[in-house]
Image 1 (spheres, rainbow, N blue to C red):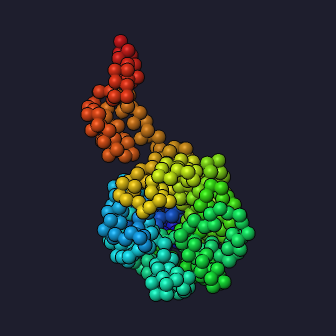
Image 2: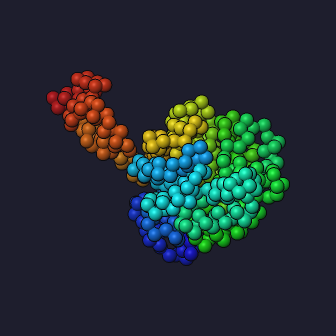
Image 3: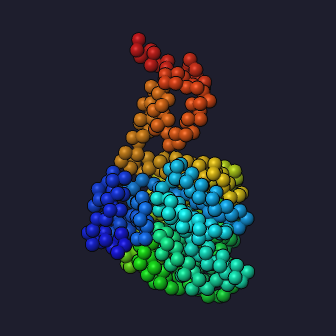
Length: 427
């Protein structure tokens, strides 16, 4: 049975116990969230080395890191090293978005060596198979798509992005829109190209029940992909995006009725004043399903610094109720990220997630900040490093300044506000 079905029957699983312990919440709270569909625990039955993670209402905001080869750059060892870097930087989950060589090898290595929940986009596998065999990704068949989903699930993948909302009706609405960026989602573009080429319905939408059967068999969490997410802030919150969201809301209900864990993916490029409305709209339309957002990026002109644009949007989104942030690296829109990009991307998203948790008023969210403030007042550099989200980053500045406990840094020196007031308060 799935985590959701067991929760509905009053069973507390080891995964629920672990999540409750991590979150500082009761096991009953986690079980209730699972039974209602407001919480998911991506935990494939085939995994035996998993560190369970809870995502959803009342839980701390989680951060996902993407890795994976591309058609132009395919180094499996580098991608596995990037995955380890993401873990060390504090990511809660990983997604393998490989579209290059050694796709199967990388996925299996990650499942074997990484304890975090792993997500994939199975349509990539189906499309690449068609590309290699027929020199055209639109030559993939419905059977190819479902076989890829079953393969990933059978190997132990914990959650899969499936673009079920990219259907014929949504495609027609896109044609009538005046979008600048027609479609930014790679998986969404694969499905849309297939629909337009064959003039047939998306197999994942047309035969959604078959997808649910696979998810039920392995307890794979469905992450309903936002194929029509805006790729420009100018396109945000338009008809194609909302049309797809309405479809996803209906699919959420069908998944829950089947006992399948499900979450919904959210927009990518959204101006800052529309972020909160987007979160509220998704929560309403999708009946409070866990919401997984890419960023969102609040401006399109931050090339080279898109991790910052995404962190700004991510903090607003998390504070408004988003449950899961997909990191964005400085290399977004420019190149395949390297190891340093991964570290920066995870760290920026973790800062956003933490800021969002403070905004949500989660119990204990401010504790770390209070401890950091006390350490700063004491000029205790060791404690500051311990309470920082990126302790390694603090270590680099400590090395530069050659700081030891009690000494002020070069910003203020003898004019350090903490030191001055501490001295005079003593008098």
